Length: 222
Image (cartoon, rainbow, N blue to C red; front, side, top):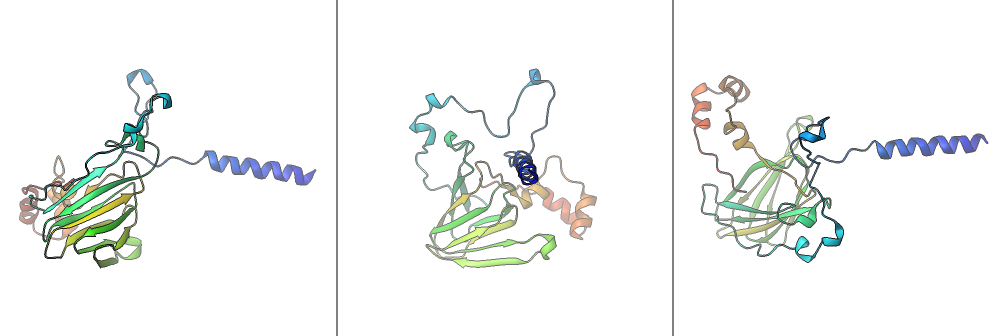
């Protein structure tokens, strides 16, 4: 009998652990409301009745070259839940990244997804930086056609075309909506701007340097 009660207690504990699990956030925030009459937003998207699903819900046409004629010389074309509605709840997405010669996909982070990148054409210098707890170590690699590299979730990473011609890569991401935060855009191009007092102390530079950077046009390549 004691063994029976022990088993029941163990199952109850296991069940509490299972039901205590929170789903990963699928947007920057989802503020709770008590009155549903004021509007409802779910963590993800609403689902259509499965009876009305069709092949087009799982299809994206024409993942062609992106326009790299911009200051960064790169273009990210996402294929996530907004492009393929059938990706909702499936926890996966991808992006095509096109690079002009010397084009850069600048330092950025995906707050909700790990990225695995495969080079289809060209040569890329890629890398990521670990967290403060790991002393911000830099991991880099030069990738050629057919090479694969992983960028762990949430870590700052980049890709630079170091070849003589154009380059193309495909990135798989472990979220239907991994999000992207481009570091320079977020720090120097936020709306409204971050206080120059904050940034001068953070970067240990003169205020005129911060003011110059905040006046720049920070291009978004995605």
